[in-house]
Every structure is written in structure tokens, then in C-alpha cells.
Length: 462
Image (cartoon, rainbow, N blue to C red; front, side, top):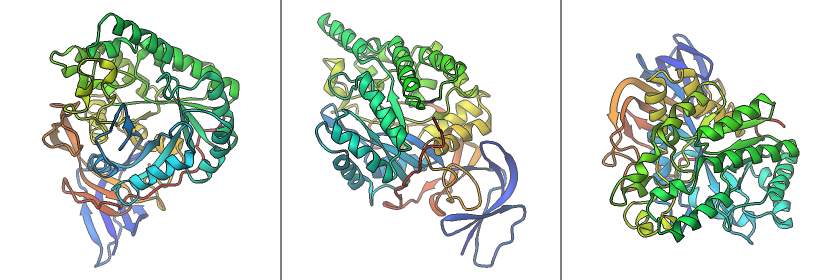
């Protein structure tokens, strides 16, 4: 028995057209007009609906041990929220402990995900130190289908690497077909300001933002790009947050650097004013990098529209307000960093991007699905609507309306960072490899149906 999606408007990163899609098993087997159906086939009428490729979120942190606690979404709850919101594949970050093999951390992350995730998944590998043993493991990690690595230029004394270590990772990973990304904030600027504010008794959530100025991001972007240019390797900037950082990327593109950038919905829709809310409320939005002043937001949208920013991910790393964020009630440095948005990304980008004329519908598909698949070695299996590709599809009703609320979200966290945001356009049906995860707006997915995706080398070359 197959599935035929009829009468839908198929939207890819380049095209938009009316057509039918046939699915047999896990795969798209035909695309065309008026496809014939067998008596045993199941037919879905998508008249008046868009058919998108399933979204890909290449930046999540499920069950992450961090700052003395663990992020609130498990691989099951986090991936359930993601797929209910139109994202069928995610890539989570493995964070190894210093002094322990990368493979040990990878095994731990596999145990968290295998048999639990309801969406398909891959892993990035963080490099928090660079030793001879770490260097020797990188080719093995790549052979296992983990072809991307992350270095932190922030979190001094915890994750931060120095310039020499970043050069070594770039050269080693690049030689074996890997892609390197950076968390681009200057950890020394942040450390200096943090110590200053603590000494002055300035400990409210507002000072988390003030200790992470946009200049710290701009400097780290520029330095990372300089080192990548020296190593003759491409560089991917995660969670770009500021117009200052974006300006450095524009300059890099003009001089011919191979740079790729990701931003997140929070840096398009939320502003740093939230940190000044009374009664510790601002702690809900403490993340790194922090939110920026409102005048940065439209510039970030323009960066997407003009192609300087290739992907929109989430940096999903939620902590409950009660019992977790409250750990830092007397000191902003103890507030766990992160928010939940894996389930909101797809719908926020459609409503406030396509719906408000900031980006085209094809650009929307590109940044939420196709570009992530190409950059991170999953295309055309993922992020596309092609014969032979995985049947990861979102049947999307552009007229459906909703409102984001903690009362209705799938995230396992006690507040929503986007509480009250109105939505126009929602997934009606979501298929993961030909099986229903959402049907008529109701989640019907299966724990453990998510499958590890061994990724090939990036589609971006040095």
C-alpha cells in the first residue's frame, strides 16, 4: 500500500508548482500530475495546502548536562516537539568531557537518542580541547557519519579553545572531509565584563546581556574567518545574533571567504528589552549569545533575504524557570543558558518571514530545510522533494491560525519564550519516511521511530 498526496502546491527551495506525490514505503517514488492510485493506496487531498520538505534543525541540545543541571527536553520530548512543528530531522551536539575520548561522549549521546527520538537525527562533535588523542579520533568520527565539528571561542576555562587549537581542528577536519563551526564570541571580553559586573554587585539578568556585547561576537567572527582563511578551509558560524557580526560576514563574502552562517528565531523576533523585566523574569531569555536590541532584528532578516545567512536553526536548550533558571536568582552567571524553540522555528519563520513579506516562500524552504541538508551532508535524501528521497513531508495549511503558549506546546519546559506569538500557517500533516507523525493537526508519532543519519562530507568545499 502506498500513499498519494494529491492536488497540493509543492514548494522547494527553487520551485513552486501543483502536483501529486507518491510514496512507497519510506521513499518518494513519483512526482507528477494526476498520478494514478491503486485500490489499496491511501490518498491525502492537499487541495489548498502547501507541501514542503520536512524541516531540518541543525542546532539542538537535548539532555545536555550544563551549568550544574540538564536541559529539560529529552531526545523523545524534544524531537516530538520538533516534528509536531514541521521539523523532521535534527542534529544535536555531542559535548565531550575534557580528558576523555570523543568516542566515549558519542556512545553516551547515542544511548540518549537511540530508541527514543521520534524524528531522524545526526550529531555534531564539539572539540573542547585539542590533544594528540583528540586529533587521532577526528578521522574515525568522520567515518562514523559525524562530519561536522564545533569549537567554542567563548566559555573561558570550560569549552574555549585558543587560536592554535582552532587552526589545528580546521586543518585536520578539512583534510578528512569535515566541516568546522564556531561559537563566535570573544570569551576574554565576556570574562572581563562578567568579573567587573560581579565586583560592582550588578547581578540581575540584564547584566548577562551587557557582559556579552555585540563587539565580542563581531571580533570572534572576524578572528574565526581569519584563521579559516589561513587554514584554507570553510567556516560555519552558529547562532549569529547581531548586526555587528553580520557586517563582518558581509565583508568576508566580498573578499571571497568561504563562510556560512546560521541564525535562530530569537535573534529575528525577540529583543534585549526582555532582560530588564522585573522580578527575575528576564532570566527566561538568558542564552549565549544573548538577545540584541530591537534595531538588530530587521538587519538579521535582511541577512537571510540577501543570502548572507544560509540557515535558521534553534540552539534549542531549554531549562525550566522554576528550579533551573532560578539557580541564578542572586547571580546572573548561574542562570542556565538557553530556551526552547525546536517546535516553534518552522511556524515562526513562515508567519513572520513569508507572511510579512520579509522572505519568499522558496527562501523559507531553503533556510529551514534545503540549505541545512546540503551544508551538512544529507542532501538529497533530506531537505528536498525528489524521487528517491526520503518521504519527509509537511502538508501545510497557510490559512490555519494559532497562538504559541506554554499550555499547548510539546516542549518539556514550564514556560514559552514566545508566549502569545500569533501564527498564521500551520502543519496539518507531517510524514517521516512515509509514516505519519502528525495527522490532521494531531501528533501521532512513535517513540523510537527516529533513525540516526550517517552524514556524508559537506556540500561546501574549501
